[in-house]
Image: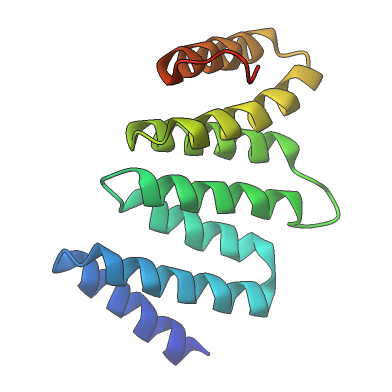
Length: 144
């Protein structure tokens, strides 16, 4: 087990060093699958977060952060909805940076649902304002 993980992590580092992001992402997905099979969602979340840090463009980071958020919904007997919402909001920021406005809207909507139930008015206001700006940027307000 450890040899495989070590080799994959070395390959990941090498691909980043030689600026082959596409191969680094493939290795990340393989590590994600291995960790998910072996130990469940908790360590998988860590793998995805580490992979999201290295993406400069934002799109892959958004995808990894979104998958990481989903790990918090099934991580244990206790559903970690606030962490889910936080990582969805982070994914939305990455998607927006990558000009993927529809994905940013979807992630922010899911985060807003969680925070609206928690009576956290400042976070709820921020997400609502962000959603309004994204819909304005998209050119539609019909999806609200």
